[in-house]
Image (cartoon, rainbow, N blue to C red; front, side, top):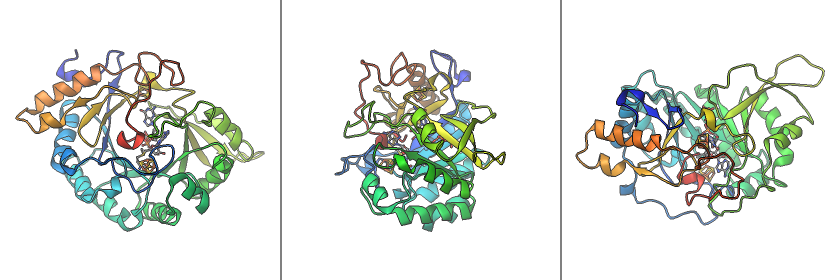
Length: 344
Ligand SMILES: Nc1nc2c(ncn2[C@@H]2O[C@H](COP(=O)(O)OP(=O)(O)OP(=O)(O)O)[C@@H](O)[C@H]2O)c(=O)[nH]1
Ligand SMILES: C[S@@+](CC[C@H](N)C(=O)[O-])C[C@H]1O[C@@H](n2cnc3c(N)ncnc32)[C@H](O)[C@@H]1O
Ligand code: SF4
Ligand code: SF4
């Protein structure tokens, strides 16, 4: 087991310095690759981390466990009524900490300026289609206009660099890949395509159904030329490419591809996750979780909580919740948690 000074080290020598906290399991969309149409049975309010508990966990992570970056996620973090207060409290305690959020942007137009004012550094927004019918088919809600207004508001508020996340679904929005990229480039937004992962509540994922990173590059090449981005990847899930038009040297921007299934990046993983109900997930695909909420609500001191967190991370699997790489391997067992209950 690592000493207190070694932070969130695991058995494979990786050290987690990026913390992702899920603020809620609830969401106002029902993306088919994430949630079932009828939603899930939500946690009771008393089961969810309070703002004060989040502040304490982040303090322990930053002061004792060498965490250097924080991302707020969900479910949908914007549905949490005390979101602005949470960000303001975190910022007051950690003036230099990069604090980002991943959101579907529904309702963001009204809140973007307040989030920036409270101390949010930047935002990543999920957007799978620019066409109202396709958006509604994928998310099962007719809220495209709200998302587009949210993106405009986030750019205006300076929640930048802004990134857009898109999951391509075969026969639904895959033909839109190049159009989405053109739209993002015009706005200086970095688009990232995420390979669909087997973390949907409906358990409908298939290897053949998933659009691979290689296919995505092929789809984009109908309109753009991609070249590897020379910047260091530095543990990021997205592999970045510079984007140009054919026969032009002008750099239009970059696009990222998050190839969790076909080109895994687990060897350089730097993430630790806390679910909305205060459980440590050492990996996105973990089936073992370690409860910190009970400790937070006991008389345990900060050192005891830090030690429990370290133990949880020490046991982090090598990749994809297993001790070998391969989400499409025969022995991969899908977790009971959907992506919305983990935070992505
Ligand atoms: N397999 C795997 N996928 C991840 C991991 N972190 C993020 N992803 C995937 O990448 C998607 C986008 O993540 P975001 O929440 O936007 O965060 P990010 O890409 O790490 O953020 P940036 O710091 O802005 O690059 C997530 O929803 C996941 O699908 C990870 O540790 N493992
Ligand atoms: C779980 S959501 C939480 C934050 C917010 N609700 C949102 O959608 O941005 C985080 C990210 O996970 C991605 N995601 C959800 N289910 C996925 C899946 N099965 N495979 C790949 N990415 C998925 C979404 O596209 C989103 O970018
Ligand atoms: S991906 Fe995000 S917006 Fe879509 S259902 Fe899941 S949590 Fe909600
Ligand atoms: S699958 Fe697990 S180990 Fe691999 S990058 Fe994602 S969180 Fe890290």
